[in-house]
Length: 169
Length: 151
Image (cartoon, one colour):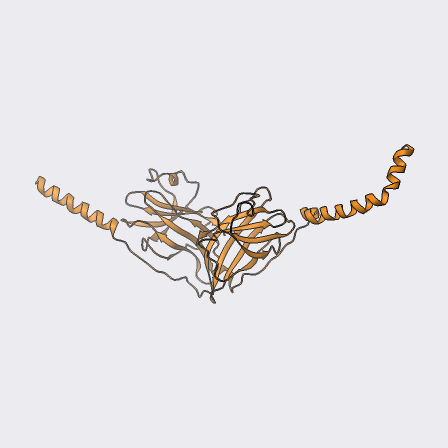
């Protein structure tokens, strides 16, 4: 280090500190880079009593296939009656011998409007109505990791009216 | 004979059409006493600031609206808020000041991980404010957005 630069920095040392420090503080305050490593975890309970009876376990929106179908399919767990499927905001077209099934979302048959092979699924019962909120009990032993899609299925014509892929709530 | 078959066919057609056109309506109640009702829900997306989880709006018995985030995760940052925006969805880093998007402030983000609740001001029009955004007010950047769908 030669004399000139030394004298330049030492002459302006305090000036540099006076300007540099607020700049560093401002940059820190602006970006708060430590937050990249520091997580802030919370775990608030739901603002209502028993959560499993209001928050579903799975939910998904119904997409129309062979017939216009819309609404939401959710699976709830209850303390005493086991699990059930609930359709809300639901509309499909009326038809003959329409059933509610659980199937596997990646089943190739679900990509078609009319099933040509055999749709592997768990029968939940005849569709109670083509409009309105409705519940269907689930068999106790059902594996919802595997059967992760709700299908509105016309058994007579093998027509898929609508499908809802279930996602974890 | 042919006429008989024709009329039989006509009957079948009419019957079929009737089956399709008439509609059955049901109204099952939930299988338990409820103290809150979900109105809308959606999942977060955001890649630039990894954001994931679910946002759900509940209406409590007293009519109060609550936004609840579950399985929630985003990146920590300075001056991050939870807002509702009058848009169908929002892209990563969207600047709502610049795009002049109407917003409803719900408060500072309580934590960047975990379940949390926010009160929605009374009179908020949920048909209009239909997307939840995790928004960095300091840099006017959207960390993640959850478009809500009717429950």
